[in-house]
Image (cartoon, rainbow, N blue to C red; front, side, top):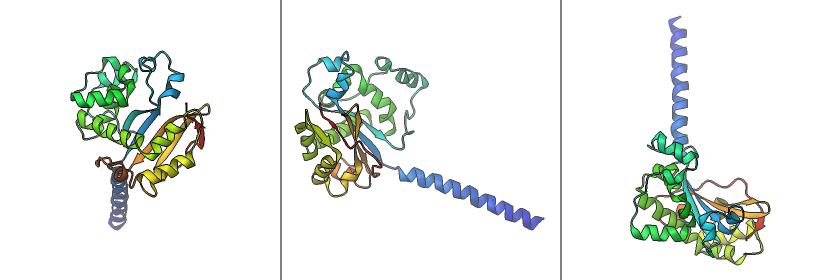
Amino acid sequence: MKKIFSILSLSTILFANSGFFSFLNKDNEYKNRAVLSISMQNAFCQTHKNKKECQMGSKKILTLHGLWFQPKNRQYCNVSKKIIGADKNHQWYRLPDIKMDHRTREELLTAMPSVATDLHEHEWYKHGTCSNFGSNEYFMRSIGYFKQFENSKAGRLVYSKRGNILYIDELRKSFDESFGNEASKKIEMMCENGKVTEIRINLGNYTTQNLNNAVTNGINVKKSCKSGMVI
């Protein structure tokens, strides 16, 4: 009986350790990984005409949505239930003000017109608090990645396609040319009603400021919208 008990105990320990190490490996798999989300402003404003940012007359097609840390459930780190409740109820105007310097705020106003409706507050409390960055660094890192994409060959391609169809294959080709071979496997398009609504980029290392390096080791995209109108 003692021998059987010893075998069962050993099996239990091994099973427990296996699960434990699987958990550690899964956690390590997502270390320093994030998703950069870029919105198509005109597509957004077609269905949100009453939003303040849609009444500002911005000529931007691409705007910063956010930098989301992975896995997806990595949210609201050390955030109070009161703040989480207000955020989930889209009462972003009730969220505490975020500290950032003047330069960061000015650049954010340009990159993210939805600051007008407090999107930045939502992005910080839901995602930024899990970044190991302070609020200023979180937004500067997000803005930096966004500007690198917008000013790249891939970003210029999107702007050139206004009023026309953008195909994922041509976007991926230009993304490779901008950020290195294999980078194209990290980018996807989101579409709705035949229009491109969002572009997402999987980052493998958000601790570097250079987007070329950040996409390295990002998780490959499994599916994507194949084509859509840029408006």
